[in-house]
Image (cartoon, rainbow, N blue to C red; front, side):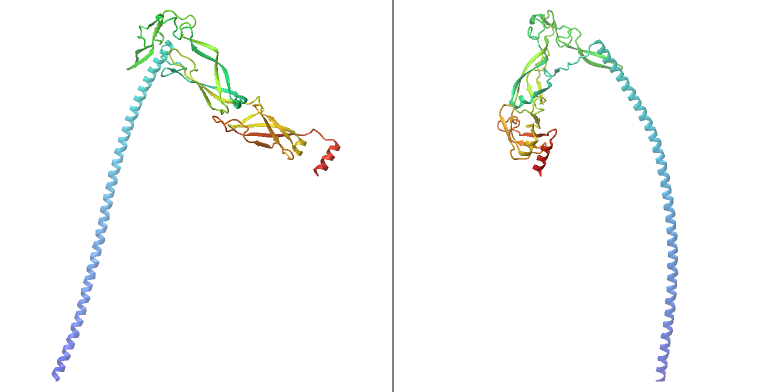
Length: 369
């Protein structure tokens, strides 16, 4: 019994000693691990520092390379710019020489009268140019519709020779110089270049024919100028301002061409009429009444442009100065319409007496009070 107790005590003591040694060993291992971790951290920091230095060196090297490339590019650009300026100067000099050469040729031809031009009255496709004129029409003729005759200076075909310029066709032959073309093709030297140009034939003057016996009336021109050529024009009722009336084949004539059209642009004149045009289809009219009529009313008539009577009945009505009275369907006829009309606007003007007697003033005052 005693030996068992003693053995148990020794065993417990061994356990305690083992526990103490275990704790010491654990502490030593932790210290060793901490030292190892600290060394690893220090090594990592040193590695990071080395990496940063390497990056800085790499960046510096790249900057130097970029700067060198930029310097090379700037030098190349300067060389290219100088080459471009040189080419531009060469082209500019070329165009100046070309312009001077063309100008010389054109001026030389103008001086010699050889430039092939087209008269301003002529148009392409064998027809003379249409002509525009402004035609002033009195408002009465627009209200009623009418036919008028105008006189214009015109260039017309000679009635004697029919525009040939000769008594008969046998008196006209084809020009041998241009073979009837009226133009010749010539080569013009312009510096280093040659230009092909068409000019009027110097023999026939661009006509393509030669007249051996000229017409006595037009002297070979085939045209005559008539200073008082008469043209009849139909003016429709109510035609608006700015509307065009086309008169076929009444433009100026030209040899060998069909006549263009005469285009008349309408403009209303109402300076001599009591009726004035207002807008497209309305009319204005002014009447004058006395002060008494303005106060007690009035009844008046207007004689319209076609002679019919328009009545204005304002009895037992006070009329204000410059009052405007609208009368329906008494204006101009609507263009290209039979049953539609504009309106008539009548403006009232009041004539005041120059003075009143004392008795008239007293009576008027008592009346108004």
